[in-house]
Every structure is written in structure tokens, then in C-alpha cells.
Image 1 (tube, rainbow, N blue to C red):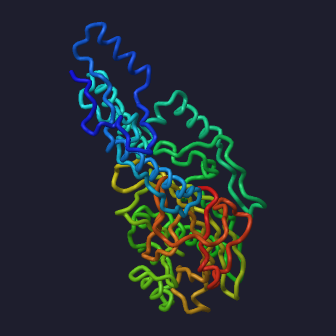
Image 2: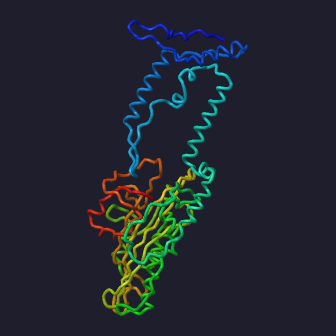
Image 3: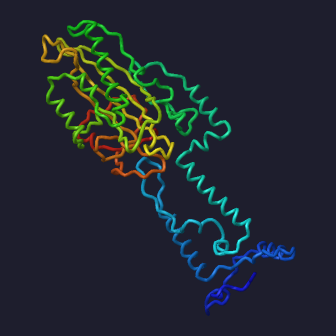
Length: 416
């Protein structure tokens, strides 16, 4: 055992420099003396850091302070890159003298190991929060109670007058409860949420014809926005099978959008598709809310108008994380069923007259045919959001008309 000072002789200061003050506290020195008095042969004196160590520590501390002061808060979906601390791992875990003491006791080594294990555990919880949340007293019960109290809303028949209020029992979504903290928890599931109005004869078409138009519109929504294969990036073949074969221009446009998507010909305005290499659905349930109406169009035609919002819970495809993100898509479509005796149409198939969509929690400025949700703690890779903030659950107003100015807008999402 030696208590000799390090070779740099840190106690001898150059002229004009303030005298170095020891980083060893009185408590540490007294503890050492007690160990020696008790006959502890393995007791090691707390070693002073070298002058080089103290200088590096001061420099890193100054850099850390500069890095922290230059960082920006990341509250919005479009997150700015955050400056990283300048200190290497381990330099931030305790006093400098501990870092340079090569003769620590076994007890100190054990605490160091605990510190490493704790850091690993925190990193694991960051990507798998359910490991912690599911074990917190009452968390599973609270989540189940929140779902139980979120009784299913009656079907929407007209446009609501306001946005839904904040959820009474908010919480973090998990794989077991992917809609926790969302108004969608009280929405109906999947295709069952698309309820058809009672058909009646209009526009020179029979009640049976109108009922067929309503069913075909629902089938189209399911094929474009709920089909599991399409959600995983597949081709929407079932949707094409419902469209008028004689509308060559439209069919060609949609196929081009899927093959070579662009900003002006984006398939996502009609089809919900996610990159299977990036994300996958967090379960089998998609929450849906909206309504469908119909009216006579021209003679021998019925026009069906549908307005629905779809909430998709997602996890990363690599399987290393159970963090859930939600992407919300609102769609408006207008479809026409026409009498083939009076119009040049394929019997029993729908004419896609107009469609519009709004996407929430999707990267701005990426046009590759897939939605790209942002997860908590991720840094967005798309273009900055410059538009206004919107609530994706607010269905109290119609979507914009899809004009060029609207198509360019990308704003922030107030909640998911």
C-alpha cells in the first residue's frame, strides 16, 4: 500500500496560480483512517487525480455545459437533433478520484457493477417500457380499468360539432393496450365500425342498387385502409377489383402512383401502406370512426360519400422494441354507382369520383409510397413541419379541397 502522490505533484502549483484544493473530503479521509486503525490490510488511501486528469475533467465539464446550453427541447413531432454530452461514459458517474483509483475495494467494484447494470436496465426500459410498466403496482389494473371505462361510442351518423375531449385516464400505449390514452379507445374496431345507412331508392335506381353501392363503398374502404396485406406494404388488388374497368385514365394513374410514387401522385392519398422493413402493426385492431351518406347524382346514378378516420398502432419491425406509436389517417371518398344501361360503366363496379386524405404522425416530405411514423425519442428524418398544429381526432370540419396549396402543407400533430 502506498500513499505517495502521483508523479505530476499536483500540490505544487505554478507561480500566480491558485493553490489546488484536494478533492478528498474529510469524511473520505476519516473512513480511510478507521480502516487502517481496524487493521484492514487491503485498505487503500483515496488517491488524488493527476494534474492531467483534473485538467481533462475541467475541459469536459465546460464542454458539457456548452452542449447543454445549446440543446433544444423536442416537444413537437418534428424533433430537432439534440447535442450530445461531451464526456465519455463513466466520467459522469461519480467523483473523479474514483475513476482513477486502480486499487478500489471489492465493495466499490460491486457498486460499479450495479451502476453498469442499472444503466443497461434503463436502456432496456427505453425500448421495452412494458418491462417496467407492466410490473408497476396497479399499472395493468389501471390500464384494464381505463379500457373498461372507455365504453364504445354509438355509431357516428353526422359530422360531430367538436373534437373529443382529453382522455380522463391518460397513459402510455403498450402492446397489450395500444390505444391507451387515445380517444380511439372508445371507437369501434375495424370493418365493424363502418355501419351502412338504410338504403332507399334514389336517382332512378332501386333500393337494391343503392344497397349495393353502400356495400361496395364499405368494401373499398376495407380494401384500401384495413386489409392486413396492404397495411404491410402489399398491393391493393381487392380495391382495384371494385372499380369501374372502363375508367382507363384513373386506373393507370393509380398503378403509376404505386409503382413510382411522387408528391403529386401519391398512393397514400387512397391506400394505407407502411414499410414492412420499418414498422409492423401492434396487434390486429385498427380503430375506426366516421359515417357514410348517399344521395342522387345524375339520372341513373347514386353518389355515396364516406368520411372515416383510421387509427393504426405500430411498433418497429426489428422486434427490439415494444414502444407503440400511432398514425392517424382521415379519408373522404365519393363513389358513384351508375346504371350500365344509361352509362358506360362496368356493371356492379364503382366509379371513384373524388378522394381526399389527411395524415397524422407521418414524416413530412417523403414520397416513397409508405407512411413513416415517428416514435418517441426518435429524430424525424423528413422535412421540417411548417404548417399549423392540428388535432387528428377533430372530425368537426371537412377536409380541405386538396388544392395545390393544401397539398404542400405539413404541420404538427397535437396528440396521437
